[in-house]
Length: 158
Image: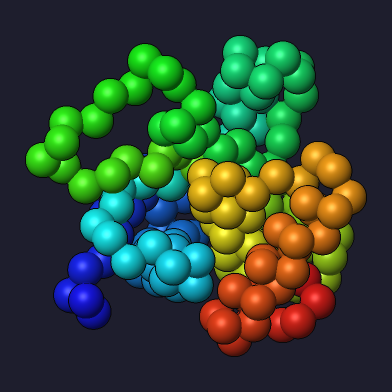
């Protein structure tokens, strides 16, 4: 069972590859999925981009013409998406605005690395069906986020 790891495709659409620790981001995704009991082979994509691109996606798919920190597009959201039966389950895509993560990290007085980890965890939880629109569901989702972040040995109050 320990041999089964998720396939996380990390795409960086900005010239910031030297600033991102791809191995750390891979670990964050793996720990999040393990914490949530995802023991089967899965695939997902993490995309790190800029505010302009995330704003375009937010406008196109969510109807909000503004940048945001993270968007999650689960494969279950589209009835048109059909995965071949011989491939691992595809969870979906998490899109993160790197500039927004940097800005939020400064506002919250923690590292960009910690903020990126939080956004990865948050996005993956959305892929797994968590919702933060209603108070009760948000409390449950944020409790899971906190537990995962503690597991990653980051500060308790991000």
